[in-house]
Length: 80
Image (cartoon, rainbow, N blue to C red; front, side, top):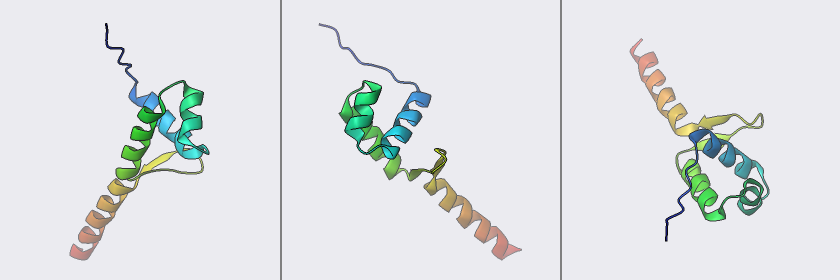
């Protein structure tokens, strides 16, 4: 009996996360994509934990990276 592990590209994952975050439910988004809800739910949870936010224009922003960049810029500004 073979193990049917499905591989998803990073672009597919990103688009799936966007769809799930903009959808009324992860279940609906997973059904639309034809994939297991648990897989999509784990991707969405990880994205939220990493601070990824989907904006109204469907672009994504990593809030954690923005905070780090802001802190570095504040330190640089203070030195100047």
